[in-house]
Structures are given as C-alpha cells and as structure tokens.
Length: 56
Image (cartoon, rainbow, N blue to C red; front, side):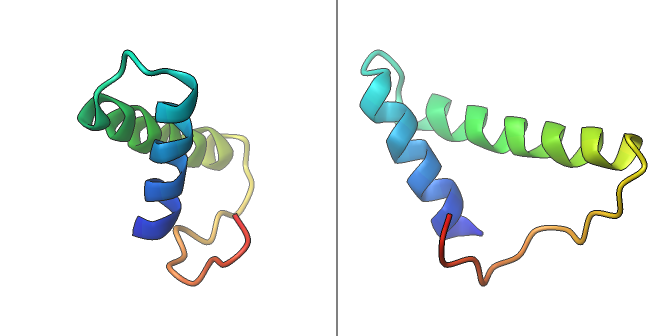
C-alpha cells in the first residue's frame, strides 16, 4: 500500500507544483480513508487495504 500511496502522491505533485510532499501525501491518505468510509456506509463489503497491488 505504501507504494500505491507513493505513486498517487507523486502524481498529485506532478499536477500541482505548489504543494509540498507532506501536503500531497496527507491529501492522498485522507481521500483514501474517505473512500473506505463511504464504501462501507454504502453497504458494500470492503476487504481493506492490500499491500500486493501491482496495477494501480
């Protein structure tokens, strides 16, 4: 999962050069947590974060 967050953070920095690395990483992590919460509230079974994602 760390690799996935790292790639998303770097992608965000590519499109927004005014953001610091820490800010971009925080955005990525917070949006991911929001996704998990929203998915669960919608009644879907979410299997949680996976560290073995290859194609993200």
